Each structure stands twice: as C-alpha cells, then as structure tokens.
Image (cartoon, rainbow, N blue to C red; front, side, top):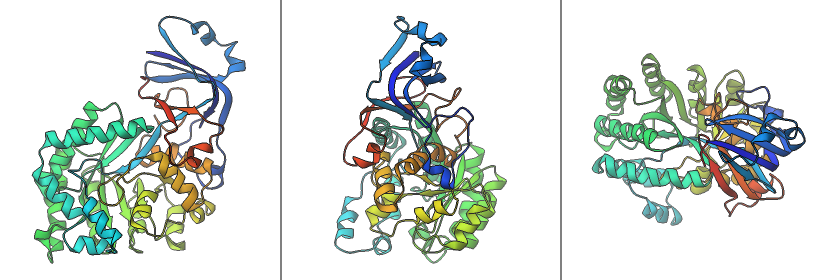
Length: 418
C-alpha cells in the first residue's frame, strides 16, 4: 500500500539524522514541520517535508493516482505511534476486588500478604488455557492500538511455575503472529515468590536460574529478562544471580526497580547494562549518578503511582540532571489497569511536571529505545517503519496531554497499513 498524507498541520518528531534517544535539556525541544506531507510505501516512511517543498518533489505526481491512498490531514497532527515498553498484558481476568480493598485502606503489600496481588493473578493464569489468554490479550492489544500504541513489550511473571511461565511466553509468541503491533517478550519469572516457596525464596531463585531460564532461552521465547528487585520481593544479590544467568543465555536485562524503596535495583541494572530500569519512584542522587554513566533508559510508570497512590518518580530532577526518560503504561490487572498512553502523557505533565515536548519524547523515541526498537520506530525518519498516529483536529501538540479525558487519535497506521 502507498499512502500520501498531505496538508498536515504539524508533523512531529521528525529526524533527518536519526538519534537513538533524547536526554536532558534536549527533551524540551521537539522537531516538527508545519504544513507538511508524508509518503509511505511498502510499510516504510519514504519521504516527508513541507508542503512548500512537496510541489517540487517527485511525489506531487502521485496525488490523485488510483493506487495511492491519499489522506487530507488538514488541522491534524501526525506523529510516531506510541512505544509502550513495559506491560503485563497477558493475564487472566481482572482484580477489582483488590481495588475495593485498596479504597478501604489496605496497602499494596498488605493485599499481597493476604494472597492478593501477583499471586492472585498467578492462580488465575495457571488455571487458564492458552486460547483464553490469547483471546483476552488480543482484545487489549486492539484497545491500545486504537489509542495510538504501535509497539509494546509484554512480560511474563503471572505464571510463577515453569509450565505456566512457558505458557505465558508461548502466548506472547502467538500474539506476535496475530497482532500487527511490534511486540517484544520479556521473561519475568522473578516477579514474586510463589506461596509454595514461602520461607524458601532461595529455592525459587534456583528454580528460575537452573530450570526456567534454560528452557525459555532454548525455545527462543524471550527477548529480555526482568526481575522485580524491591523490598519484599527479590534482593539485590538474588537479582544479580538471575541477571547473570539470563545474560549467559543471551537475554538482555530489564529491571523492575525502586518502586517501593531504595532497593539497589537501579545500580544492579546499570552494572549489567540493562536496557531499562523501570518504576523508579525511589530515585536519589546515587541512582541518578549511576544512570548518567550508563546506556540504561530510566522508564517511569506514572499509571502505577497514580493507581496505588504512591509518590511519583522525580522526573524533573532526572531530566534536569541530564538523563533521558521514557514512560510506559505498566498495563496490568493489579496496579495499572490501563494501557492508555495518552493518559500516561497527561500524568507526566500534571504529576511529574514534565512539559509536552518531554512527554512526547518519552512515549515515542525514548520508549522505542527502552524496548530495543529505536532503529525502526519512535520517530519520523526515512526508512523507518510507518507506525503513525493521525490526530483529530487539535490546536497544538500540547493539547495531547492537556485533554486527558478524551481520545485525540483519529487514525492509526501500523506497518504502513490503515
């Protein structure tokens, strides 16, 4: 399919020379072309520029051709589709009863001690077959696609047995075949300690290292490995062991870190060249210093902080210190039951005092970096995959995070297809 989008009010996140990520003060500047055009062929961005240049380009002759799908984007913005680098979209059923418990005053950790939380999702997932899980996940993928997401990372971690973790990862593999979205899979066997291993956490860590990781790697089921390194979950030393085992089997690290306390997870992630460290509600000077000397992407999940009524990560301090920042939805049934990246942008502005340019970088190019697809997604550049959002008629791009209760997306193009 060939698509010509013309008379675009503003074409956002454009690049003539591609960047892998945007950091520090550069996040305040958003490259854009007003009154623009964009041409797509064979699923890729082939050309873009101003309408003034369009008249003298070879693409002007394409206008009106029967084999060209032409879109008039008058009054509308065009930008890269969102890259959501941290989700748990494969799960069985919802957990609104725990939501009520939370309203009544129980903490995340208290709910977990009562058998709720991750262990609740694990029980449900263990009882579900792959067909059920695929059908539920496809509905969620369609939901986020219509809200503008074109790429998504999906974690295991609700299995917590070898068979169920493999089941989750096989489901994700099927989703890669069935969904048009770009999908990355992450093995998160160390998401929580199963009830059967209570007071024997070391034995569960051994199971993850000695049995799960070799099988996951042997079947080629995961792109990355993750550990929930935090108070009440996995220690810095256990995380160290698990990551080392994963690396030996070709799995690059991504870390859940510092959501509940200063856990050392950020430093462990940096030590092992983690692609990203995620959550980061507890981030101080030592953690920022470690990240500044690394290629690891700090990834913030404001939906979880909002839903759990926690302190938000210090995004302003991180960016002002020179760090890049990505944001993701953490879409999951217990602590962030939404994959709406438009809402994530709004939370970034309202709760973490990021400006619109910064949140757009955080959910496009930096999000792409955090899931290892920055070479093909995350910006408007010739040769990149055509995963794009066409907005509704909006006055400025600041309207995207400003109008937090509405869907500003009118059309989504994935792999060059409407």
